[in-house]
Length: 159
Image (cartoon, rainbow, N blue to C red; front, side, top):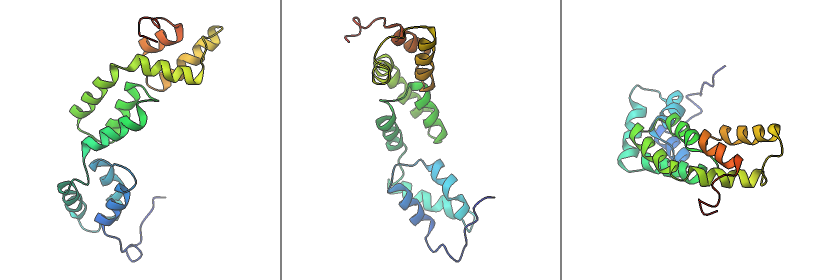
């Protein structure tokens, strides 16, 4: 059963609801549209409120990208972050630019995540599989996962 807001109990405007959401973290326009659509009483009302907020730079897609990268890049691989950015309804070009920057540091980030979780090379095939699945589930590339779990290239990468 979907939540049906009561019109008489919700005196907060759409713009007020959007600002309340934005005070907690950055949201893309598409995310705000999904969250606030149930509160729209008249067609076009939500789009107008979001247009005003976007004109005043309360909604900024680049800040959303930067926020996701800041919060998630140290823990997740480029594939997982790409998926998160795409689900936020962001411009595909901005997503590609962000992911391209992440791929340069993928191996180092995967190695750091692996080190925090495991710290030592796998002792058998079962442990190797567990470590590989852990890193793959976090969106790291299969090449980076293979290299980290095998322990190769540590001296070459400066670690």
